[in-house]
Amino acid sequence: MLLKSMFFSLAASLELESYSWPCAFFFSVRQSAARLLLKFGIFVVYGSLLGVIGYALGPSFGAILWHLLRFLHLGEPSQAHQLQPSKDTASYYSLYVVWQTGVAGLIAYTFPLRSGAMGASPSAVPVSSSGFDLGATPLPIWKKLAAVSMILVVAFFAVSEVRRLKIAKAQQEERHKLIVQSAAEAPSLANLARIEPREPGQVLILEAISGHDWDGGSVTPTPPPSPQGGPPTLPPSVFYFVSYHGLPHTDPQQPVMPSFDVSVTEYPNSAWAHYSLRNYPTINASITTANSIQRVSKFGNSIYVNSAWIYPDGKGTTYFYWPSGNFAVAIRFYSPTEDVVLQKYLALHPSSL
Image (cartoon, rainbow, N blue to C red; front, side, top):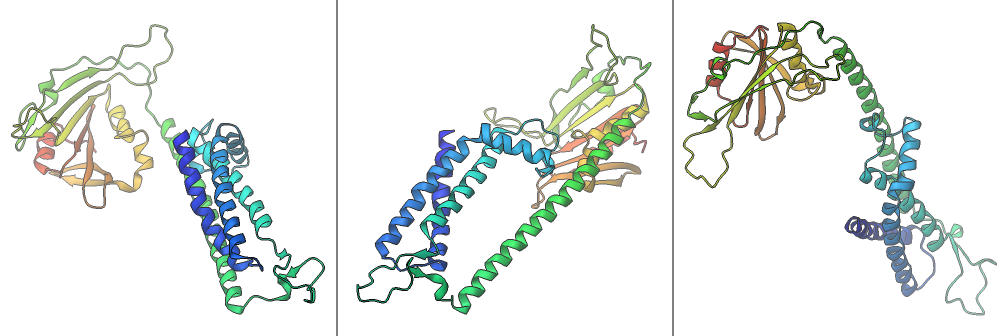
C-alpha cells in the first residue's frame, strides 16, 4: 500500500509539472522567475500529497464512487456483474476525483487571471484598482489556435471514449444474453447413469507419437452425488488425460515441459459430449472466443480449432477438439501443431460433427 502510494505520489508530481508549465504559458502574469519557481514547487508538493491521499481513500470514497457509477450504469461494462470493486479499482476511482479536483483548485489559486502588477513605480499609471488585467492584452493568434486545438483534441478523445464504452456495454449485454441462452440449452440431467472407468489404454494412446513420449496418463471419475441430496448440476463423466513431451530428455534438473496434451471425457450420452465443448477450454468459450473458433477438416473429419491464445508472433497454445459419440476429445498444443497427432486420435475417436 505504501509503495503504491509513493508511486502515485511520484506520478502525480510529474504530471503536475506538465500542468504547471502550460498554466504559466497561457495565464502568465507579471511576476518574477523566483515566484514562478516557488509556485511550481507548491504544485509538486501539493500534487504528491493529493496522490497519496486519493489512493488511500479507495476503500471508502472510491468504493462509494464505484457503486454510484454502477447504479447510474456508467461504470465499466466488464464490472457490471461485480458486487464489490477490487481494492485497486476503488483506489483508482478516488485518486482520479481527489487529484483532479484538488489540482483544479490549485490552478485557480496559483495562476489567477488577475494579479497585482509587480515592480510598478509609484509614478506609473495604475492599470486598474485590482491590478494587472490579462483581458486588456489579448493572446496572440497562434496561442489562441493552440488553445482551441487542445480543446478539440480533448473533446475528440472524450467523444471517442464515450462511444467506445457504449459499444462495449452493448457487446457485454449481447454476450450475457447468449450465455443465458446457452445455459438454457443444456441437455437434461434426469436419469443419467453413472459411468464406469475404462482402462486408460482403451481411450488414450499410451505410446510415443512422432518423437514425443507420454507421461503415464490419469483417470478421474466425477465425484459421487452429495449425501445431502439435491438435483445434480453436472452430468456424470470420466476424465482421461495424458501429456506428451519431446525426446530425448537428458537433463533431470530441468522440468519436463509438454509439447501437447490430450484429454478425453466420457459422458452418459452424445448430447452432453457435444454440449460440453461449448465450455472448452474455458467456461463459455464458444461465446467469449467465438471469433477465434473455426471448423476445419482433418483426415476426413470435421473438428474445431480455437486460436484465441495464439500471439501475433505465432507462438502460444492451440486447441483442437471434437465430439466422438459419448466422448469429448481435446488436444492442446503448446508448440507448433502436428497433424500426425490429430490423425492418430481421429482414428481412435472419429468426429461425430
